[in-house]
Image (cartoon, rainbow, N blue to C red; front, side, top):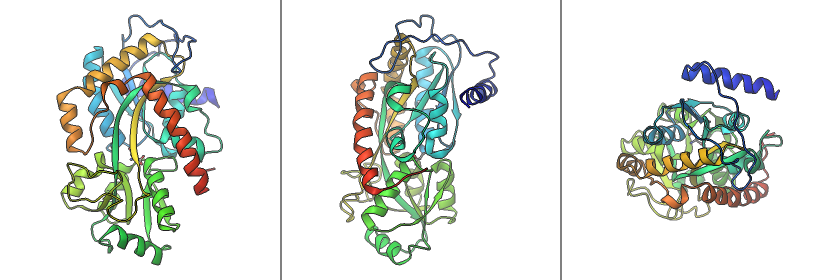
Length: 342
Ligand code: ASP
């Protein structure tokens, strides 16, 4: 099973980046951040693949593409972004966990790395054991958005509406383990309802269907919804952070709108397979820091309602600490909500 998945990953990667061989592993065995020993001189000498575990055009994809170019410039190579969708981000994450630990396969993931272990009985990977952390990237507020002709006008109206129409209302998400799933879970638990969920392979296509009126509402990062909110293509009820988002000044916070318990901030980080040499991870982390300081990246993120993390958080240790803390936090919330994927 493991072998066939690895072959499938390799085949996909070769198809995506046009290379004819994947280099043998140069794994070390240091522990600490889940990364390996010190070797890795000469890295990188070929293209690097960044795996996004959700659809192209969605928020995780957007953030990845934003930083890929300045990171590639700093590293002196090309970065190819590859979307490996499915099961709320767990398919792509699993493939990277089993890839060669040589720094040429890197995963961009978000808060889902810390929620999936509590949701899936057999995830097939362990976040702290099977990955090395490279650094945090950004924390993105979510928005609660609906198709523009959906009747409820405010978040309170939405709660009343879903309570009265629970069997009819549809809630889109990017699969169990996705940030949109988590936010939807918190919404349903705060509102005291169970809704019909419509899973997609990413919220890029979910937002397209929301704009088209095929689904009623969903939660999604501002990095995906800002444009559609500003253009009036969707109705925005609230942002899920304690403060309003500068680029969306008219959208109230969930606390202001009457659901203070609905709080989620979607943190993103870069991962490598465990055992990747320290020197390689360090190079990736330095390139990440450079990308996050890039004026174009800062400006683009600001337009989409977010900011890069401070430089001290774009490090393997800060990222690892965050992952550890979040695994504990969400395990408890999910256990209290009594949800399981399989
Ligand atoms: N926003 C998505 C989520 O719900 C993922 C994506 O498409 O980027 O996790």
